[in-house]
Image (cartoon, rainbow, N blue to C red; front, side, top):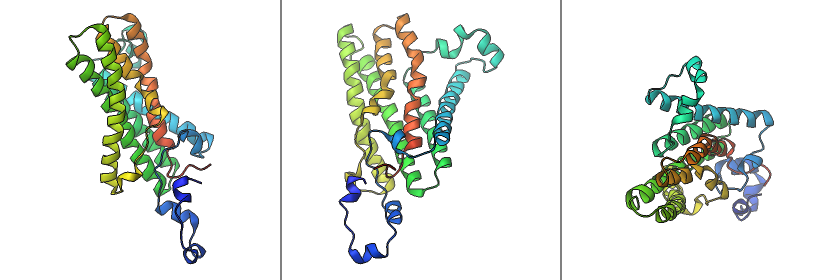
Length: 250
């Protein structure tokens, strides 16, 4: 059982007439585990549905970005000349990353709410979606600011350190800002904020790629690595879809 819940003691006369599951549902705990996807307790089919919807969310964002950039969405044209498709040619910078991150989180949120009718779990997913969107958006903006705006005319090595610093600053700043925004929206005390966890950094391949792109804008290797960014951005949406108020195997 979760530590926070375990430390809360109800009077004996209340416990005698209280359904423990009702207590959990009315007092959702948003403390973040280190293994959300494993701890959700969902069936394999439900997990597959969440994964599929999250991928669809990223794909939908890519389609909108491609359309906005003047690329055709007709499959016959897309696959006929794949080397010149949007996915192959685009540089994934702040705008593109934020759009894909939002699509991922919305896909995961929609799927999670479909497979789980529990109100507390849905609230946890909504809260996590806001956290993850901030976790994707704010660091990419700090990398852009540090690598291009502030240190854009400095040496390559300084730009590289600035980019790395931008990732670290952005992750911490995102957690700070989004916790307070969440607590304001959900009217909950700041002490219930979500902690930074290791998988928060898993979606930041895009930040490192962006920093490298500013340092070496013509690098074919950097551009090639950037093709992995959409796949990395599936992770935030899956975190959202699998989020529950209290992990099932606590």
